[in-house]
Length: 310
Image 1 (cartoon, rainbow, N blue to C red):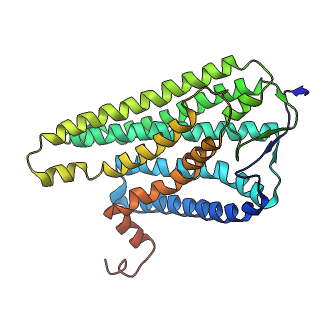
Image 2 (cartoon, one colour):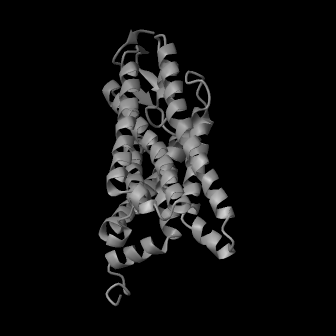
């Protein structure tokens, strides 16, 4: 087959059976709308309530913004493919999708690490917490995360753009991911494989180690608290964060802990659905359902029955 540096691709989507497309469309349209609603409501609740203008909720709002962008990067194209049966995508469109998926995945990773640091400072150093997590430092941590994510994604996408691909190739996925693209390339992909593994190791493993070390210190500090009530109060804000961490890293590692150019499997598609659509949809509900402050802020913001009386 002929090789080209700017070919068109065809996304095969979630299933080759047209009879399942309508069912998948209904399911994932519902998930997409639920994800949009949940993240927008969480952003609204945090922004509208001055009592939630704290470092923890600032980083949570950043996570909701990232998740909102994350699902919007993949879901509309997937829904279009399921509705029309046309999965064609241009080379530039494919690279754009690769770029933003990498940015938002890296941001999720980095923000979870920053939120772990925030919980460490709040629980292990409560008296120094206002001095440690000032608005300026929170802004630096958030903007630094955005900068690192964009730089890492830009480097990798530029290298990917130099590869040649077989013309009119079918991508066995519902979005343009770097792994299937490397598999379909007719160029030498060793540099791209090395970059992908190196960036994944530096950003992913270092962030995970940061989270693990933060919670190691947190659990040691909580173990020294004499009363059970004090321990529960200290860990009250950690449960949601740990749930999101486990959900995110389990799906990402299931998808990426092997050679980038290895053959594609249906299990990778399931894992990709989890971390690009289901996890960002669940995150705002994981944080809000167990948080009385967020729920009361939403009630006041949406002018529910008890809001005006409060």
